[in-house]
Image (cartoon, rainbow, N blue to C red; front, top):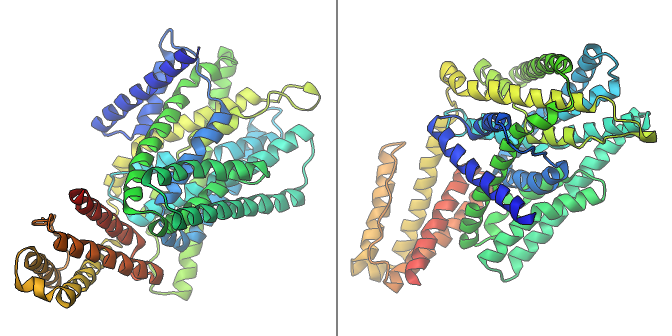
Length: 536
């Protein structure tokens, strides 16, 4: 039994990898392609019925996926977008849940408001992986990508809290709005606090104890599960715990991890998240036989109509909310900050259109109990599950496949691109000048002898002159001559540490974009790895 299940899992992972390669060849984002492939496979005769266990999704898949996303999110960008994140991650979720509750109650005979909020809580959060994977490689402003990624870090938590309170109302038959509101802030706040406390403990261990890259990688792999399980044990938000802890560790990663650890963990996490995401998206498509098994031909037609209407409502609700909130923000900014940069209509439309649903919605629907108090069957369970499935398929396929041509049609210009290029050149200039001053001060005698020291100094001097002459000049890779010389290698390692300290100051003072600083830190990690590997 174990061997057959293991073989099935390995076969699926192999198929996922091949399908992703095919999707890349066809220029279709892999979440969309895998869901479609899963649907097609599920219709083939002889395909075994595979049912997603919601506990596996929440315990195995969700923590590492959210942790990885939060580790890649620059804290400075997250904090800068905090108001817009709150409006989308919390405000839009509550708005969507409420509107869907009333629409479904009016649309479906016998559907109660509590059941409507259960459905609304399930389908309100856009999927984190779907949005970022679809947008990957497309030429769109970085601030839009950051906003969509940051939104997806918090909307899962807010939607699941709504879902749980609505589920409690259905099961118990009663609901107290004031108690639910207080519980919401308690669950969210304590979840964040638990995540930060655990992250701080992990930071202290990795910062002040002797570890290896393997140990550091193991700690990062275990961290999201510890944060999630501890928070859930105390009936708090495990998702917000993982997100808060991930953001904390991301901000302090340059202090607690060595260059070897940063390189090794990056590779491990890229592979892990790819396999987990691919697995869950193909499983979404494979759920079709299980979901339709509880419907007759007539009832499935009615359920399909309900699903399509609610799918259209979900898309329109996001449109209305994004445009309304942006309109208010623009009016306020123009009144108080006349020269502030405000979102264009094209940027607003793109944010509004990127609302694909995914694994969290389906897992929440599958997690609904089969019975309520007194042993009675949970009302409309399979209808809610079917509507959720339709919403996921419609939003993923319709919106996912149209985003790329939509971006080409809109021709959105990144208004911050020129500023970012200028910052890139300024950062390169300041680091090069710092390195040149260090060489001139501590390696005068070595410079008189020529060789690699003079070559390195000339390289930095040329870099400074070129950057000053022409803004936006892209430098090629620099070759390092005769790295085997201990004295020369010592110089290069000193320059790396010097640059790291300076980058830390820039991070604290927020002199440059955190994305640029992370990029430079990664370059320094690779350079140090090359030097020390040659030494070995």
